[in-house]
Figure 1 (cartoon, rainbow, N blue to C red):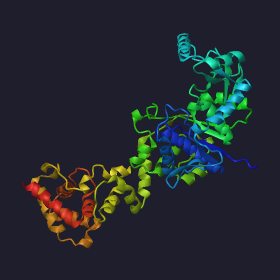
Figure 2 (cartoon, rainbow, N blue to C red; figure 1 turned 135 degrees about the vertical axis):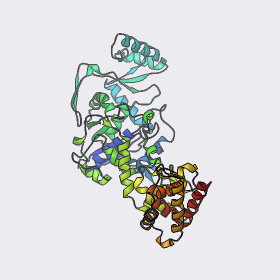
Figure 3 (cartoon, one colour; figure 1 turned 90 degrees about the vertical axis):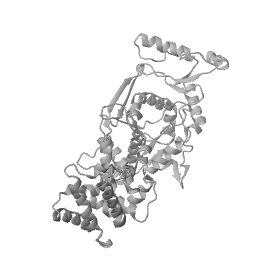
Figure 4 (tube, one colour; figure 1 turned 180 degrees about the vertical axis):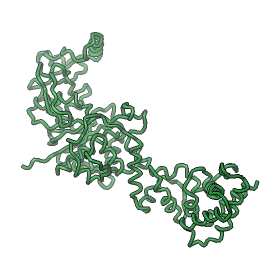
Length: 488
């Protein structure tokens, strides 16, 4: 049978899809696809207290929205989420029977044991260890209970948990595909909880069992799980299962090296999509958070990333999340869109009724300036309603009332004679320059008041662009209003 590479992305449904989680999903996706393998989307929802209603649907839809289509697991089809593959179910909460069956094997062969310690005893134990400046760790109070004692306590105890029996004084070693050889003495490892008092397995047990049963060959995950890997290796050995390869991804941090969190800014992929970041830009930028092609290239579509990606090119050092760099990527991809595509994508960011081809003209002049699609509707209300501005704003700082009045009057006289077919950016700027020259004015006497008359802003697209966007009728109407305001 041909050996097929399989990876998995296994998020918990505790809310939004984090930027760091998207990178984990992306790297699993790229590695599997490059090796003509398969990638699974599995949901690890055994922590009932942290699971949020609707989060699973949101995770699946967001991954689909950024273009990651999984081979197996929870798949979005016809806007409905369905389970696809031979390893159903892919929700861990529906696999409890499987975990308990395997847990029974660990209990029988002595690799796991029942623990009846109360929360109060465990809290007191941890407090004492901390006072002694010892690493908090279970003291093995229930580790060697006799079978008879266990049977008795199972009948009388209010609750229990099941722990992994870590072998004593044994070297646990593995070769991480990013961090290299790692060795840990088993005496430093806590007897990990495998089954919680609510009857649900912990991440450690469920993820090892599922990875084995789903034939996962490469476990690619964040380096926060690196300290847990020796526990997982012990579990694999206890079940006498072959080990997968492990690759732990470096942390993503803010520019000040602080943890990437909501306090510092958006961390949810959904938030970026809602603000008008393109999926292509997000994928391209996030791919570079820890990986690079070792040359000067920066722009890659998903297919190109599949061709170029390799675990060997992932850095060990933390990756810095730079919002300005993401905006730069996004601006690049916005510039590549056709006007029609950009117009369609911008519609949701402009909640106004726009007549005729006004939106197309607005998009055309705004495209080179946009960092995000949402900017099309930010500070540009003058496109949709007549601007309000103070009289003094019409006068450029190096001009005066007299010259500004002349500039507006002469502009009106000439612009009224321009035929509709000639109302184009190239001809309009030529006309404005001629008005400046023929009337011995400065550019600020003409260009500035027209800009303010049309936009009510000190900063906006150029006067000729605004004239073109608004068309002859609306432009003359606004300039006449400015002339009236100036005369008061």
